[in-house]
View 1 (cartoon, rainbow, N blue to C red):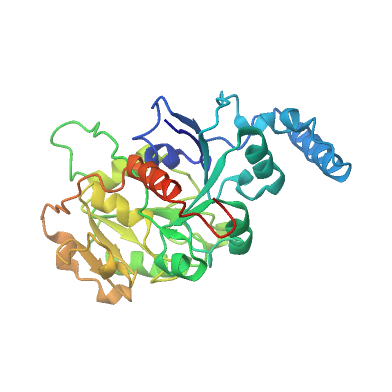
View 2: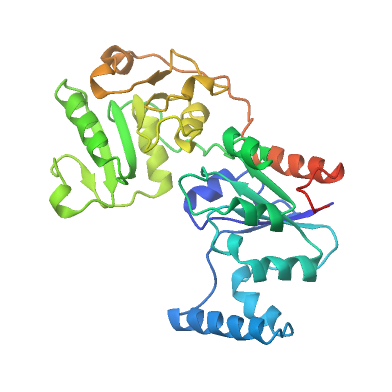
Length: 331
C-alpha cells in the first residue's frame, strides 16, 4: 500500500478538505509551514541551504530540511507519494523537492486549487519537477496538460442545537477585500436598503475604507469552523469573485455540501456539475439580485454523495501512476 504525505497549505480549512483521509494508516498529514522556533532560525537555515547548494554538499540536507516535516514521522519506504497544495511554501522549493525524490524515491504530486492567473504559479516549473499535477480549473488543465479534478472537502459535523438552523442572517459573506471591496459594499447597500439581514465579514480593509463599520465586521478573521456555523444558520451565502467566471470555487463546494442557497457573480456557475437554478442565483450587478430567492424558505438538496472526498483523489493518483500517465519526462 502506498504512503501519502500530504503537505497542506497551513490554513484550518485544509484539515476540513482532507478530513476523510486524516488518521488513515497510510496517510501523513502536515499542515504547518515549518517548525522553525524563530525568524532567526529560519533565516539561518536559508543561508545554510544557499551555501550547501553553492558548494554542492548534500550530506547536511537531512538536517536542513528536517523542520519542513514539522515533527511528523515520514516512513522510509519505496512506495511513497508527497502531495503538495499549491500554496504550500515548499511546493516551489526545487532543492527540497529533489531531496524528497532522492531520499525517498518519491513520486511528487501537486494539487492546484487556485487559477494560475491569480497566483504566482510557474506552470513550466511544476510540469518539469512534479510527476502529476491536478487542478480544479479545466482551462489550466487543458493549457498545461495537467489532470482535472474536483475540489477536496469533507463535511463537518453539525454541532448546532436542534431548532437553531435558520436563526442567522438572510445573507452571509466572509472574505478578503482584495480588489473587490466596492463590489462587496455596493451589494451590501442594495441588500440592507431592502430590509435584508446581512452578516458581512471583510478583512484586509484600510481604516479609511471601512464604511458601515457599525454593522460590518472588519479585519477580524473568523475561524473556519465559525464560518461554516454562520453559513449553516443563514438563508443564503454570498460569493463575489475578483474575476467572475474564474470558478469553480470552494464557496460553491461548501454550498453544495451543506445544502445552502448561494448568490454568486461567477458567470461559470451554470457549468458546475451540481448547479440547480432553484438554489444558485447568478448575478452581474446588485440590482439584479432577486430578493424572492433570498426570502423563500426552501430547503436545497444538491444530491451530494461524497464526490469531493479526498479518498477519491488518492485513488485518482494511484490510477494515473499505475498506467504511467505522468507528465512528460516522468514515469
